Image 1 (cartoon, rainbow, N blue to C red):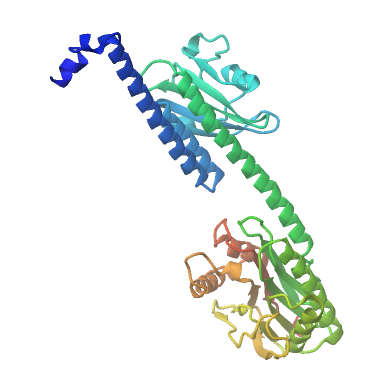
Image 2 (image 1 turned 180 degrees about the horizontal axis):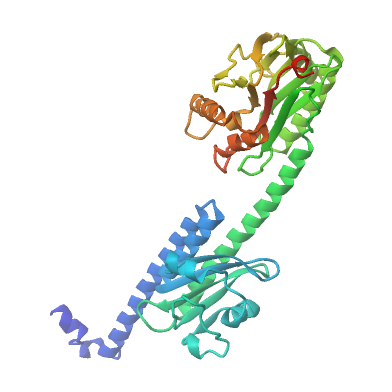
Length: 444
């Protein structure tokens, strides 16, 4: 017996009360189950794709795109609302960029959108143009017929709404479509809420971190600026710091350091080390290596020897047109010197061992004469390290950028040096930049 004969019910009598019509209904039901299973599989794939996205904007684009595919919609959009119910962002699907540019504004909570926002429950419209709340389309907006809209809610708070228009296969949206979009709207709400919570955490952590960092003093003939950028990771707080202390003998003591770890504890330890270092440097006015060695001893005695790298230097006038830099390093990256003619070179020496390793071992001191009108940079490794890239390549990149930017005012140069590494940092960054003017004897 052929398959066609079976489908036509050739054995209807043998099937008893079911009959050929019942067989057809069973087949249709099986097809619906198979289609539903496929859609559920695609929904699961969509959730996995969304959860893998770290950037909110990309996650929202993924949600809109997969939602439109699941319900076979020609157009889709996700509008993000602020706490006052106004749209702050709009992610679209199926609308060309030039069309979006022509429309040129955020949607307003009027008409059908107002009803969707205020109702806070799904809404299906088979003919948009006949709905009592329809107010027409903006200039350039595609003409749409059917609409499926669902609110984006998390624990009773409205974060926005999702709406889709015009099924490619024709016909109205169904109950199954509504359930799928509602599930994905929940994912969108969680993504938006998490992004807002992260932003609040980032701002609070950065404010706390900056409160631990000092204001730069008047450095008597030296122009200086400092920058701090938190890591893009959570929590956005760490143990990087900078400091400048004017010592009793009139010499500037320059410090940049990095406590091991990336959490609140690291920031607290950083504050302890920074304050302790200030006291020791002020009291002793001794060579940098002796200050670091004494700091290491005290930290071991009082705090168990936390791990950190530090570069400490004294910078003072030397002769008519020069400055003298004396420094010692506890495992920290070397300073970068950029001369007036654009030559960029690292002051590479024995880096010494980090704090917290062996307090009984001493560290060497180093000295170099620096020409006036040079720029001197102290930094932490977050400025020269990137995932998948060796620190050597990052240091070469920093040297090239500093050379190219040397003619800029110091504040602008510091900002540009941070910007050239991009918007995201895998570690927090402290940068202390100094412009070596002519010594005071020549300015008087």
